[in-house]
Image (cartoon, rainbow, N blue to C red; front, side, top):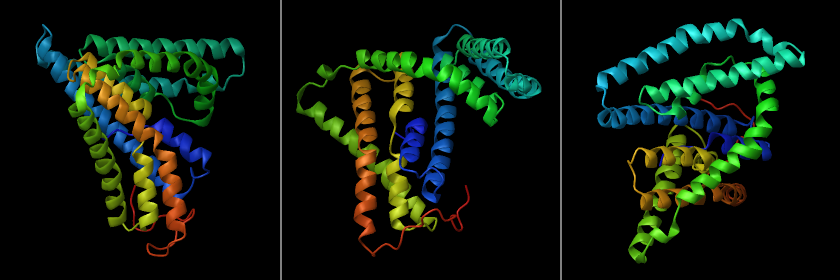
Length: 285
């Protein structure tokens, strides 16, 4: 219910030229903290669920996971920082070798996390988190791997999720009423909660409502977490289908809702003026 689609949010802000505005900056910061927190909580749940069903003791999984995280932070990350100059090399052969090593590192990290009893998603996610962060490396990786992931793997993942979603499982008015309640709780809990929290932090109502509408989008991140939950048998196929429909509905409503909020409140002077590209006062990120 609480996850935010960080890539979708960034795309919406970029298309609206709000990526550097105070509202966009705060929404991106909230989404980043939200997603990292969600992944950490999901990792703990995955360890507990898979550890209880596995043959090895739970303490082995926990100790192995802590050792894996420590090794990635204390050993692998400094090593990657030492060799980040390879990405600045303009030779094609060097670039291809670097990309190959990154792919092998990501796949190895995913396999290790799977063997530890967490989930292979977390290994890949953590591999990306410890990689050096600079404009050159990010641009090179996006240019080399972006077309493949966006044109092949991403559509396949959406198709895979669609095959696992069955609207036919929602039989009778009671099931559809539950779906309506799920969507209502998701929107009210995420959007209203974020709006009230932002206003309490000193942000005008229109900015606060815009932040609430932005972080309410769920998109791909929600689908990833739902598939993990279904694989771990935490949720059943019927609830999985409801949650997928909720994710689609909340993602689709983001742009129209943002248009309505900005257009409606811009003609009203009840909640103050919109702070365009001004730094937020008294708000710590």
